[in-house]
Length: 81
Image (cartoon, rainbow, N blue to C red; front, top):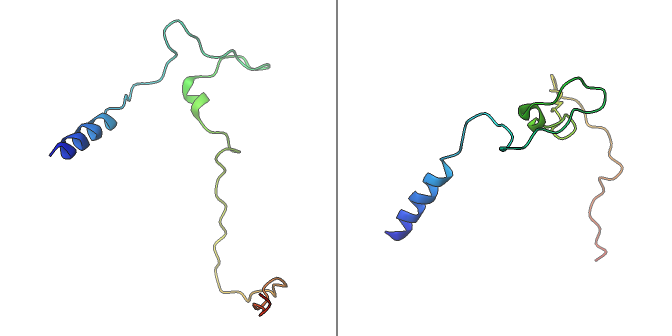
């Protein structure tokens, strides 16, 4: 019974996240604008991952089957152990 109660409390705590817009802490400011930019970045823009951090997937789908090319490293196993 105690485990069930503890699990319920932990689940409730995990679900009570704040969904308000982000803003700097009281008395703090956002970082200064980078050199060459006119204004400061918003908190939302600073939290977006860069394309290098989260690259897009590029998957080319096959329309028809193609014969595999010979792989020089696809060798049968040897008995040398």
